[in-house]
Length: 112
Image 1 (cartoon, one colour):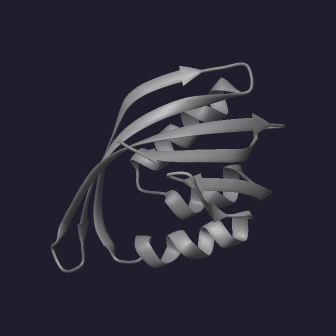
Image 2: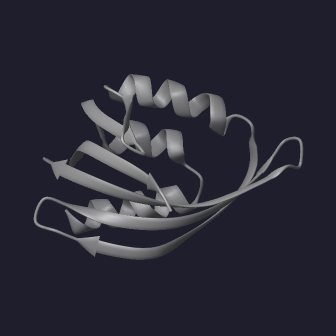
Image 3: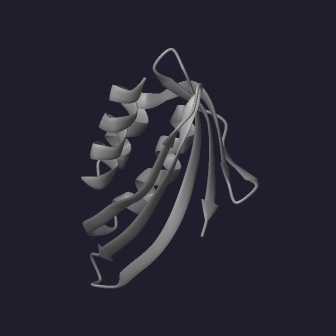
């Protein structure tokens, strides 16, 4: 599982959010964002993220922390993105992921 998590991190840092969504999220993934359901499937997550990602001109994503558990991981990233309108968006977030058969079946995101 570690190699898949490391690849997920690499793809996220490269701004390949849609690609990692297709590669690593289970078709029936459950995703939460700050305690609320964000998506109930990979397709729903992909479509919601596509609208945001399409407006991003450049990504600067840094991994701040990585803790691997028996069934997943907890990753903390600092994000800095520049939109097509030159607006800078900056935030830090924690991703708590549950993995099964090399796919993410549950992800909880928390704004820090």
